[in-house]
Length: 345
Image (tube, rainbow, N blue to C red; front, side, top):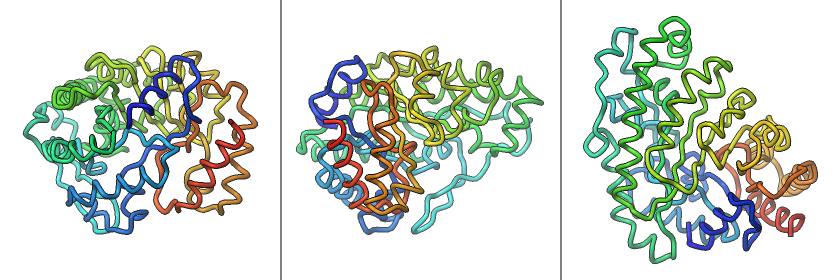
């Protein structure tokens, strides 16, 4: 993000009017390679190609904030790789990580990784170190430390079904697992901050929070998310959960979140009421069925409807309900941006 975008983001969080129309998107490897016309493997394996793709996106859509901005990542393999998960790569699809926990007893043998040396994490850091001069030449800075959330990482390590069953049947072991993962996550976030002092925000992504009940959310999600968001002093605490959010949203204030990206299946009004004051909402156009699959005319029509229905527009960063999905064309993103600027300004 450039300095003006960062200052505008801080103004929105403070309840003040930004200098430009508040529009932002989460962009990473699901969307970027296809849009740029390269394979997923090319995007992951070349610093220069990664940089060129991000640079082109920023220059093509100068009126949008891209969050977190210059995201160095290897998809869902990033954090699991540090725990020794086998990584399976595909030329045009996202990679995935194999399980390392095959029975509940394996949890007691799981060791906390060192993010400075383990898995793909050193490569994530080195890419940013290598490309930081070019990022700064564009007038941008590295502003976010980023990690998958503890529940999300846990499901990669043991499987979603297995994790959800163990949550109910083996709560002590799951607490042990989440403690190990969260301690590692804090180390990982702090390493990013120590390496790049320009970082002033934390982004955590955890869709599994949307799959648990209220009691389970309070016991297994809130304390570990709160610990992770407290890794260091921050101005922006950005949480992404585009699964069901009605149960977890009331806990956001306790967790410390002040920027929330959620599912398009929930209205902005509904989430705003549950979240309470002080939390900026990032959303909420359907990402796949409208922004990716629709025509520019449909995108404009649905965007106008979305804005018209929102009661309090002062703490909204207009976006889609989730990250930028695959196959979103340039003309649809432009239709969204142009429509927001037309109806908001």
